[in-house]
Image 1 (tube, rainbow, N blue to C red):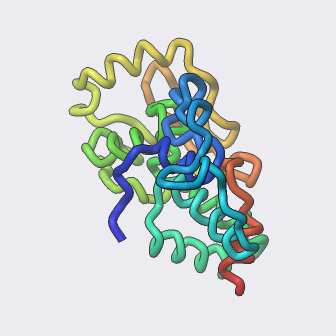
Image 2: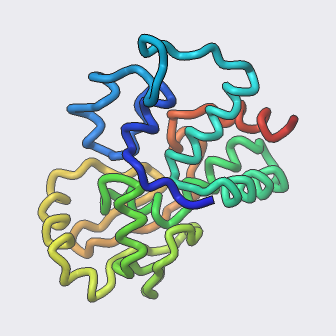
Length: 209
């Protein structure tokens, strides 16, 4: 299945709620506030009644879109989470949160996960001093995330350096060195550190049928 490249606002309208796929841009001038009806042809903009199975599918899709993960990859993450000891839903969120593109976003080096994925894909990010262009690369406790020499020469890096002066603090499981423009993984994230736009227990029910 190919990655979705259409308008992010269309996804939010389909789900009927903000998923904050464009980061801070979703806080103002949001399309769903102007056009709350689902995309496509629907009588008077009404939403159809969704079955229990449909609601479970919707939660899974929201998580997929939130983290920018393909279907097969998301299924493999769930299977890995189910094999791990502990609560499957919490394990799933922890796996998603420790993706490199998400960590770049959490550190404030990108406004959204889409932008973070692009920065990583372009080879501007280092993981423990080595260039890494794989957004799905998994970070571990003690890992250091920074910018490559090539990345530091870009106009994006210059703009980002200025923006860091007023940037919000990263979550507690991460630390950020603004002077060095780098971040460190202090610990593994908990469920409370993950995205709150979906219910992971419903996703577990979806796969446990």
